[in-house]
Length: 486
Length: 94
Image (cartoon, rainbow over all chains, first blue to last red; front, side):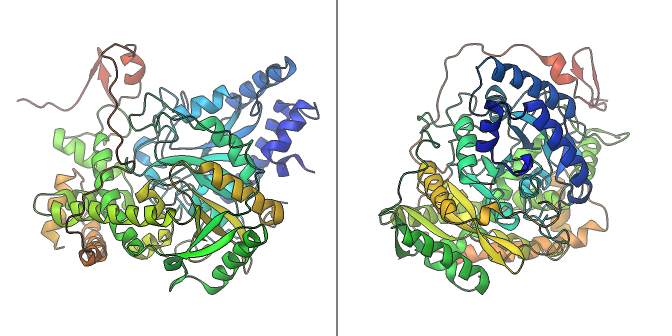
């Protein structure tokens, strides 16, 4: 099998067996990136020199018998994670010249584990978007059909894995930004429980919702990556001090008796009928494996998108106040005075959607509106969280579609923000409640992949990865590769 | 949202808008606010507002000890304008 089609697990075996070196693997994937990047625009930086240095170091570890499970394996990081000495743009003109002076904890951990960073992936500016059309560096294209969006905001990571430019990538998910692009690109994505993976060095969008995760070809590879990323970090005040289970060791546990909740509200109007059939076929596979299906209802879930579009912009308006043209990042030319410096720097440095969210957030937090919008949204957030708690008293996991439809055309939804926001109708609930959630490829609508979403209670990543892995042993959707990239 | 409200919000957010951007944000913020006003339908009497997804988690404190090194030179390498360890901005006091 071609080297680029191999999973992380297979590549790790090949490295250990001496079938190829990490330097050879790195060279081969960099060449593949060189060929396909112009069409896909999945990456914003390729870090060739650093990659070869890391690969050579990994080969020395392998030769010395000191290699860990990830030693020598190539990945890319979403360009939202700070990478020391490497431009960290967050997809924005504001940070186009920003060279991070330190590594995010996720980056540091994966580096210490011996991974080789090939580059940084494209994304919606400051992770705000569901189509990857909001990047300062231009849209990412979906490898299944380059006229279509890959989803967002981790669209570069998802497209890169789907086209097998790299076996795995990091991502972040504030309202669906790992799961939605994973579904639209036919790859596997997991967002961890809030507090499970450190947010230190992750450029903040909405601090009570942001969480890191993995995009990879399979659940087994996601388990390998997440095991290295998760865990307590004193540098993140919301990091949870709780042991990380061995996600890899538990992958093969039988799911007989697993109680699956079918979320009634996710199968109502708005869901593409073919997409629904693919999800129901996936559920039948779980039944065959001995799981049981029960319908569950989350009465307040319909309000998750409106609640999110108050809470997330409010937190974004506060977090993005730091971009002032003084300490780092973009600065406007010839400012007349301090106010002019602030206003033109921000007016010129941020793109249209980021400005829209900053203004929405500023409005909902402003005097006289706070109670009507922000406080109300926080109460609705509590209702949604309580709905999930009640559901998880009855079932072990909740399953449903990741998205209402497969990928759509570039330009189709960009003019109407509310239509665009509704792409995340099934994913936002997990963020509001801080729950771990996955998307797993479950078939095709026409020629386009769609995803099965699996949501678990807090800290149930192990259960999600286990269920997804057993599903992937029964199916081969996750092994399908878009035409032109085989 | 009328023009004046957009200009006020943009000022509060320290965003300079081009003339052509104003009607675009007027339309989109109006539709976003109409959309989020669906929240009014929810009955939330007696519901505690949720600020954080992990309820019951208390803010951790750390010992009052110095853990970071002074690295201002490295950090200021990213500054648009810095001199003698200071960040430069347009004159503030006449």
